[in-house]
Image 1: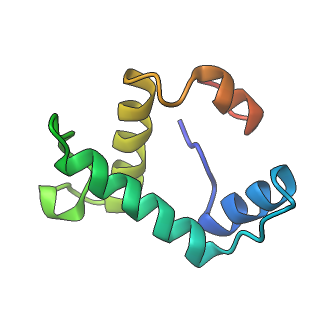
Image 2 (image 1 turned 90 degrees about the vertical axis):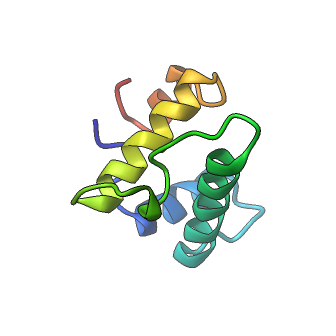
Length: 89
């Protein structure tokens, strides 16, 4: 399952969905990195979200997959949210 083709695509999609805020690739990367860090270091840390977790190549795809799965499992991200992005769950 490919959730987002690229960070620039995510920034563009977010800018169209929320035009009151300007989304940049760097901004999207910063937010995603913060989410990864919070999820991997909380009371119930989620493994496999950081490069330091010993994830094999391709690292970015694996990290993205693991984060999306963790968000879906915890109902932070719902399958309906993926449909809004034009992706199937």
